[in-house]
Length: 112
Length: 113
Image (tube, rainbow over all chains, first blue to last red; front, side, top):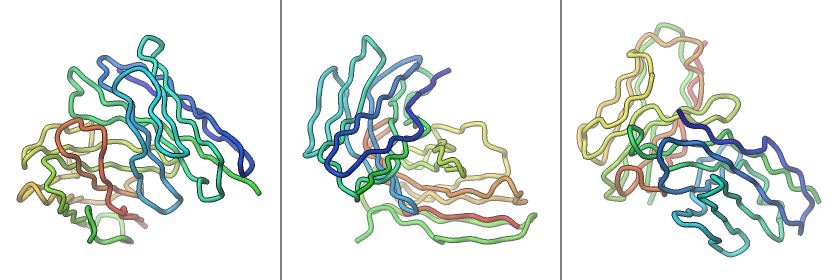
């Protein structure tokens, strides 16, 4: 089987930095994606790490360590509009090829 | 111009009824999916189609039947609706199987009463 673990909720103030960790256990592994979902909205793609290292996209960065089965999403200069759920998702392999499996999501609450 | 559109956005129906949700993508993608999101926001894949062919069928009751008339459309028909089917259903598409970037429709909130 496979599993992804991420914290259920993180609260931070505007302007702060938040790191959302994701650990995974899969039979095969082809990369880690991150998605954002606002309440009542659709999940939207943020970033993807297929190789170890840091990927930066504006205020958001994502990191992957394949040897540690671990990744994180870093949200910098937090804004109120960043209040949302953030999901890590694994592109699996083996019998699960073709499947994008999502973690349970981390609710990020940004306060003034 | 919406990339992935699904209808209806809201669906309220009684137990035992049959209902359908339609999905269309105009991105030219090969792969389409149905996901179910429960009240705890857990997103679980139900089905995946690649070029109109079923490639993933998770452990979903056979009351749920997807149909893909062409690679731009993936509809979901649900028979004999149950209270536990209440959830938000998302259609999504990606360039190919297992592609890390998927585009989601706006969701259909199904409430079974």
